[in-house]
Amino acid sequence: MKYEFLPHTADIKIRVYGKDLKEIITNSLLALKEFLGPKLTKQKRKKEIKIEGQLPDLLIDFLSEVLAQTYIEKAVFNEFQGEIDKNQLKGKISGLKFKNLSKDIKAITYHQTKLHKKDDKFIFEFLVDI
Image (cartoon, rainbow, N blue to C red; front, side, top):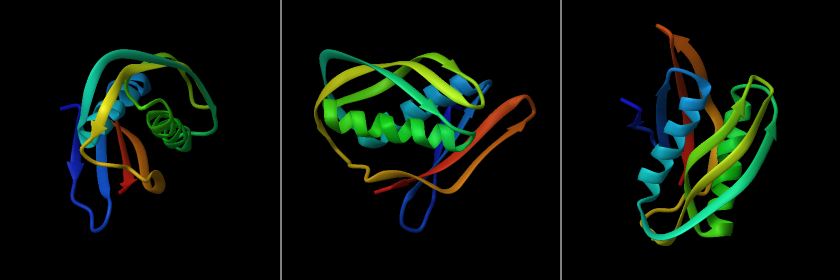
């Protein structure tokens, strides 16, 4: 399992699994893509991205920037190529332009964010404000 949607009173809670932080990022992007339900075109988009901060806020800041670029570029980004450590994330995000989205996301929030390691796997939980 790469991710799962968990019940939450007003927002959407997402739990993401990965063997490393890079896989956590990729699976988080896949979860956001599934939630947004885009009708995609074949037009590709790539963007450079660089975020600095401390984990787990670094991951939230990254996802927030991806969400902003989703609406600016009218594209859903579902791939990350680059490097991540506990203080910096840099690389390229890529995806496809969309015709429309079936759902919207207002923000990725810091509230109830968790990142921990269990049995050699990372588990990342975050809330999506809808």
